[in-house]
Image 1 (cartoon, helix red, strand yellow):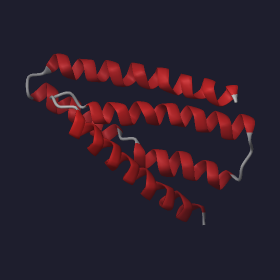
Image 2: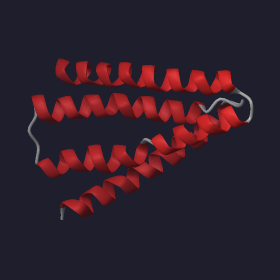
Image 3: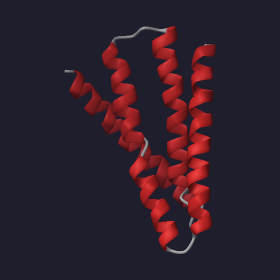
Image 4: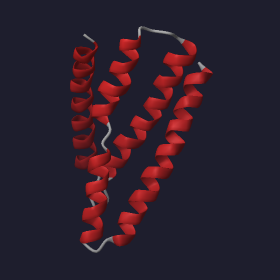
Amino acid sequence: MRTIWVGIAGFFGAIARYSLGGFISEHIAGAFPWETLAINVSGCFALGFIFALLTERFLPHPTLRIALTVGFLGAYTTFSTFAFETMRLAEDGAVLLAAVNVLASVGAGLLAVYAGTWAGRAL
C-alpha cells in the first residue's frame, strides 16, 4: 500500500514540476535554466522543512512522510535535468553559465535545505 501512496504523491509532484517549470519559462527568457534551478532549490527547502516537521515536531504515519518526501518531492525535483542542462550549456560554449548553474544549484540547494530544516524546527 505504501508504494501506491508514493506513486500518487509522485503524480502530483510531477504535475507541480511541469506547471511551475512552464510558468517560469513563459516569464523568463534566456539560456540559463531558471526553471530547473527554482524547482530544485524550492524542493530542497521543502525537503528540509517537511523532514524536520515530520520527524522532530509531529510523528505522522511513516507512509505519509515517505509519500511526501520520496513520492512528491522525488518527482518534483530533478537532478538529471540539472545535469543535462549543465552539459548542454558547456557543449554550446556557455562554460561560464554551466559553472554558474553548478555553483548556484549546489550552493542555493544547500542553503535552502538548511533554511527549510530551520523553519520546520522553528514551528
